[in-house]
Length: 370
Ligand SMILES: *Cc1c(COP(=O)(O)O)cnc(C)c1O
Image (cartoon, rainbow, N blue to C red; front, side):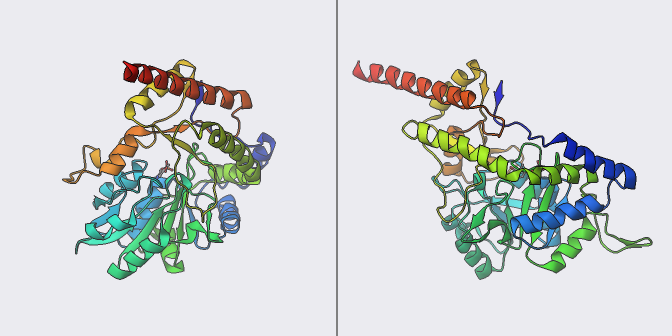
């Protein structure tokens, strides 16, 4: 079965060396040497300051909300992985959805202001599939209304925007280093803060608010990354150029072979591509389901991603229908893309998809001709 993604496993002998280090020091968690090393290397690689490693991308969001003092209502996007919304609800915040742009799939900035109320305290946009949001417009609105901005940058590892790291925008940007992501630490994540004082407070918060052997000065939680996870990250970071290269080859092949058959995400031309996902848009949900069946029959497992639109979740009370998000969510899927995907597999995916599209088209023309 060809799945939508496969966890990247780095060179084993290098990982073993790090594990030997962990065994000889006996230090397995609580801001150990490898976590410190990975923090420094990621700050350099990503060209950011104030990066804090945490145990996953979900807690990264929750800690960021807490540190920045977010309360009551938050404007966010209905088109994302569920964690963008569920973390808000989990923290007792009320997500208010601003619909997305039908082409970029990111939050439509023109929909934000109409959703702001006196209760609004923050904006939580997502760089969907690594595509940069309209960060200038969002920043302008945030400043005008005195709102904090926290970007869910789970898909935006390594992306640059106008010669600067995309991850350096907003009051904070969060990352996920889950095993399915482009760069991973098995489970893990990070928060990149604009201000050093927020970083310092977050450091306390991820370790129960403990300040010293006999001192607890904050309400905290446990959100620490451990040394084994950091070891995985260090090994993968050494191989990141190969990862990007392999992914870009697949991405470009899909782009060239499928351009006459399906619709693509419109990418922000001022940001770099990290090739993290390959989303395709069908003309209808029916066509998507037909294509998915055909692919499953050929042992290919693409994923309906993101589906469903988050404004339709059972625990969300919204009177507003976000037509663009619901429409896109019903017609989109992501094709397999990962470094170990073989050329003949990529060709098979494309062929299966094109045959299915031609078949649907033929049967449709037949009906029309009648
Ligand atoms: C993966 C992901 C998360 C959650 O990260 P975890 O590390 O799995 O907790 C949050 N937001 C988005 C957009 C994601 O893709």
